[in-house]
Image (cartoon, rainbow, N blue to C red; front, side, top):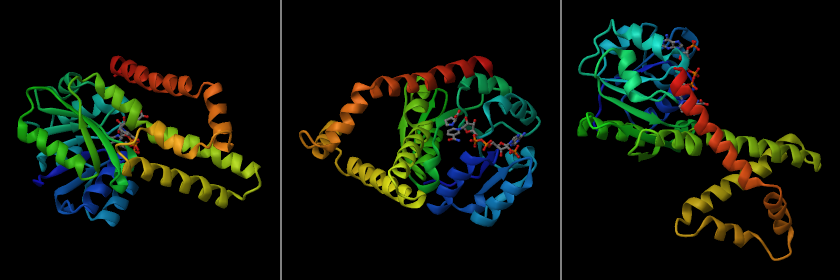
Length: 272
Ligand SMILES: NC(=O)C1=CN([C@@H]2O[C@H](COP(=O)(O)OP(=O)(O)OC[C@H]3O[C@@H](n4cnc5c(N)ncnc54)[C@H](OP(=O)(O)O)[C@@H]3O)[C@@H](O)[C@H]2O)C=CC1
Ligand SMILES: O=C(O)[C@@H]1CCC=N1
């Protein structure tokens, strides 16, 4: 991919995930700067990945061609308004924030700058990320290509045509690693109640999850229900467990959780 000088404003969990994935995929660390108010996360990024670090957002932006806005949504307005004192023209802005629309980001930045909205997730750190992207028609083709190629360094990408669909990406992929972690936590706890120690319980459930995920990825032409059917012997143990999930509203629970994420994203776009 094309390499451009890139600044991350905010060096928290998600920036670390993306930077880690980028550098592991061969993006030159010398072209990457992270800016953050406190030192420890910056120093860890410098030590672990060799990137440039600064506590001065203006400096980071002035020396970059691409600016990744990676602070919490509630801080975005303050941070962007302050960035107006830096040189913003000619920069491509890539936002990873949940619940802040492109037009609102432009308003916060005080200009009609090109903005690509993205919604990544933390597995990006392992090159297994899933990122949704949206750009309006004013974003040039080469900027779109750059943004997609950047996130492709850390996993799969999917463009959405309507900005509101980014909220759907949040529900299905941005937030969803946490759903799987929660499910595994519950399974680990039950395995412990069945008599396994914590470590063995974790091994049992994590390896089952990894195997299941690999089976899904290696069989793109098999419906998920078919993969499930392959495990489910008639009148057997899996049937008993799956039936319990179905009878107790698992699908409604999942639907409700994903709708809650979408609704919260929409609510955030009014708040911030
Ligand atoms: N975590 C996730 O799974 C995902 C998060 N996102 C989005 O990514 C964004 C960041 O989230 P996440 O990484 O989890 O949050 P974190 O809190 O881990 O990171 C935010 C970082 O911003 C820093 N910061 C605070 N004020 C400033 C400032 N004025 N200038 C520069 N940096 C500042 C914080 O520094 P300090 O701690 O020193 O105050 C912190 O390191 C959010 O908008 C979120 O919606 C999107 C997809 C997934
Ligand atoms: O919880 C959040 O708001 C962010 C966005 C997606 C994942 N984490």
